[in-house]
Length: 287
Image 1 (tube, rainbow, N blue to C red):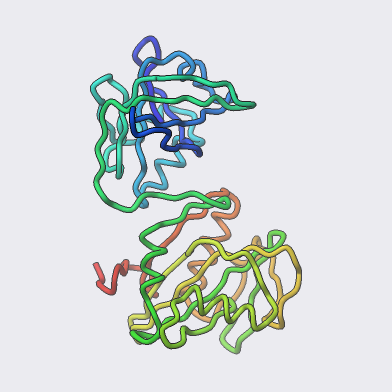
Image 2 (cartoon, rainbow, N blue to C red; image 1 turned 90 degrees about the vertical axis):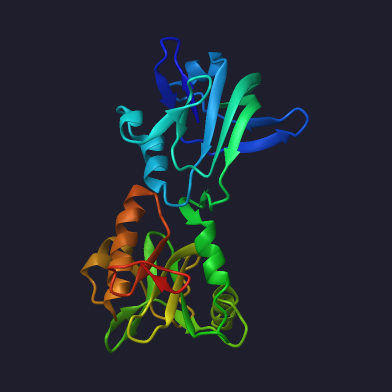
């Protein structure tokens, strides 16, 4: 969300609340926090703009959520008709005139009349349960049934800053199964974990990668549980200790090293990668 100060300087922040209010007239709302450093600007501005970020723009979301320097020097943007910044390559833009403001606890509800907009039809960046998720990645995982190609599906099950790991002769691995018949990855994972008595909250896809040698896809979901029960699948290892462990393959090592780093930043992001971690794989095509 962006606006201009009285001096014409751009300000902006990453908004967690954005919604449609009305079609006639076209109204949307955003909810800036009272603790926002630029809250006075949004309490007074005549115009503001909203850029819906694309799934590959996690870094921009992080910049406007936490970076305290010149945020606009870190990103590519252009001005709308009122001069408010629009983030380039966003999936949608809304240029708004302030329509109404409503105090709401520790936030303000700012309702805007949409004067202009653009949409590009690409997948947007999502945020839920403390991490980013990719609608495109979720869709890709759902479209990989086992009767078309074998898919390994596993779970990063977190409890109290620990992750459940299985011991194998080659090293640690995450609890995992293989898709069966026409079941997609998520359904197969739920059936597998349910059979062990584990019922964690299954979150978004965290990673998809493909073995160059076998062509088999592996899909991993982030999961949260409130119990120490392992279902006989292994033992919990502190997340801070993950980088010190020996894993069953390099892809798992890279993925869990990334998970340990993101655990500290609190910003988990989805990833689509090749097992050798040097190229990306989208819909079966390497590029």
